[in-house]
Length: 133
Image 1 (cartoon, helix red, strand yellow):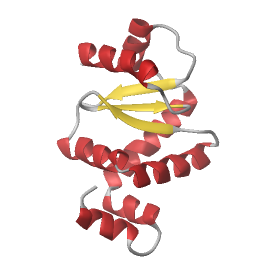
Image 2 (tube, rainbow, N blue to C red):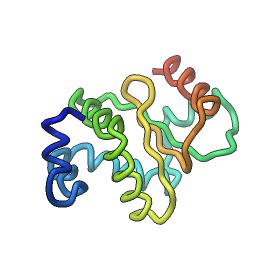
Image 3 (tube, rainbow, N blue to C red):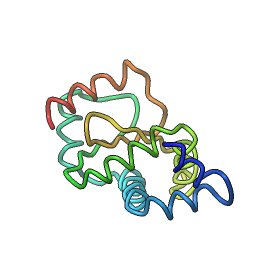
Image 4 (cartoon, rainbow, N blue to C red):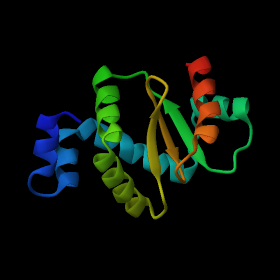
């Protein structure tokens, strides 16, 4: 997150409210992803990745976005900043009633998991994603 944005988000008030206000499309996207993960909602990209890598000892859902560059930039900015990522994970975990971990992967993909993933766990997902997209 650039310094100007970080100052606006963290200097005063509730940072989550500021994130929601400043990044409404990203907020809506993450809300959808959180509920879709919990509901086990089908996604064609996710199904192809899981078919490619096989069964995993963790739950995850990956989606590839063919949408605006701004949303991709905003999601990367929010999840690339450790503080905003942790705030968002904590918030959405409370909203859906179970642990959620958000990551960006490949160029315009979003990964939701039930725990932090290791390099050995995420590398096959990354490789499958870049082949598929």
